[in-house]
Image 1 (cartoon, rainbow, N blue to C red):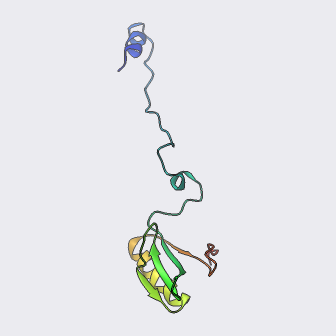
Image 2: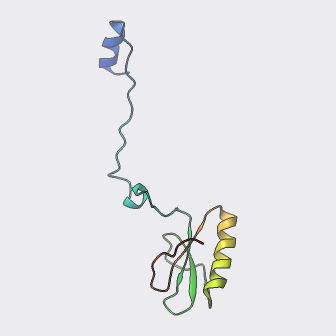
Image 3: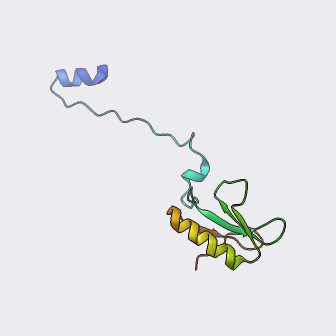
Length: 100
């Protein structure tokens, strides 16, 4: 309890609760935006060497590489279900594809 709150209580006024200040300047921009990607999401995207890959969000390496997008989506869906997350699919040009 701060000095200013004690003075109010001595006068018979209720003390105001001190709330910690929350600032978004230290929070990464991806966490503050409304359309942020879930932290544990799995991405199905084109692999640079051809084929399709499944990667976890913010990962450097792919979990697994596939010849077809359908195979990659099936694997990503299985892993995401086990982890309690979701799958984000990308088109060949790298743009996020709409959900089915």
